[in-house]
Length: 177
Image (cartoon, rainbow, N blue to C red; front, side):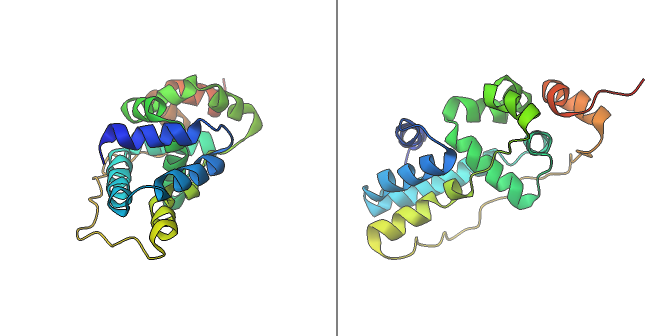
């Protein structure tokens, strides 16, 4: 599956509106209607998208926005990020601080809403099972995990303000004078 095909399927799933879990359910239905090999291709592409977004700075953004982000929480955040479409996803990977421009993220700074979508991560497995009544074939090689040696203390407000100034302005208490 090509990058454009992957994101076109996501856009079609998004066109029905609704919450991220509803988008994931529509993505399953759309993908399950395709040839099993296309579903496998979708799974491979999803893994590439998730690998490309496995970045410390994006993890820091997820941590600020959601008030914390464990390993699983960061995975689910990236599932939510996929449901936002290609433009938002690519923008967040290139510049995680750009998430401060999203009205829903800005509103979350007041409401405490968290952004996660575990169901989006299961789309290829659910679609394959629906289409074939069998499990998605296992990949021969494991996905590479990027080096995360540039971790910083996500709870350090000064570091958050330095690395993600627009998100920190929304989610970090102002410095005491």
